[in-house]
Amino acid sequence: MTVHCEGDRLLVERLGEKQDFEAELTRQGFKHEDFTLHVLREIPRGPKAAWNNDYSVTVTNVVSGRNHVYRAGPKWNWVTQSSLDLANGAYGPPPAREPPRQGTK
Image (tube, rainbow, N blue to C red; front, top):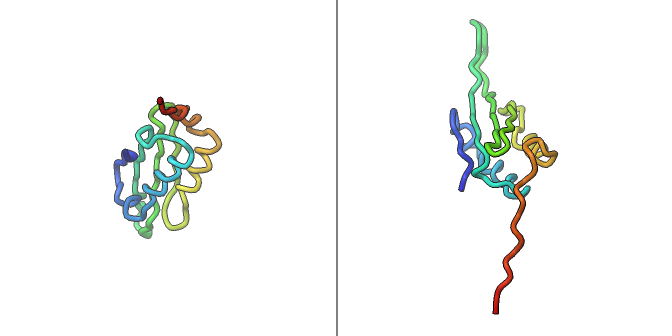
């Protein structure tokens, strides 16, 4: 199962960032279906505002209810930062893993 993604989702899908985030979830023992991403492109403001490629990504653990907003774009690496936060318990501990089943003979 994949992480549910909404908003300007093509930004993270085209760059492979969604897949990188899912790989980090797997590596750290989290379930993909426990997380959502909301992507929002930054809109330049004012008459002299220059267009930029920045956006924000809100990562939510729907089980714990914890979420964090990350800056994203060419100068920002939200996947690395969210991975550090996952490892440091910012989204809660990963779900307990079931012990491997032993075969019966």
